Length: 154
Image (cartoon, rainbow, N blue to C red):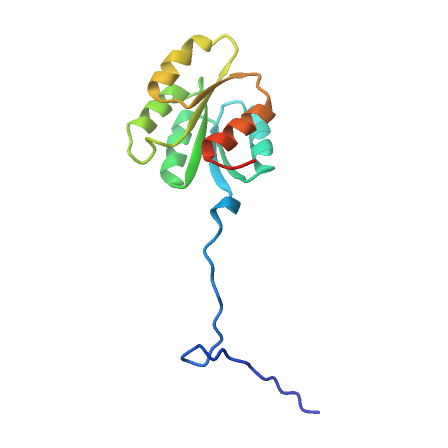
């Protein structure tokens, strides 16, 4: 028994090979990259779990210095969530660095803080924070704010 395969080629190709259409990805379906910096691992994991249920990819770091390194490493970060009080660099120090660098000057940033640190709100807003959230927070409300700041439709 003799088996033979027949290849079909597109009449539109010049070299006899089949052409395949390649459409650019739809921006509405791409996962947005979110950097979460919080020195409390359980808080970071709660945020990561909630965001990854939607159109987000999360990089989780545990201090301010790591946050700055992650920004250098991942130029596609669409939003940054920073805990106010972290080792090595505070959230406000990271935010100041971001706003002083043309690469991250316009990257949306949410500052998270423990209850009782609300007095830092004015400082965060003056540095260019887009939102200020007090812990404990509603993951649902945080998710809605991240959707809004990244331009993703719910």
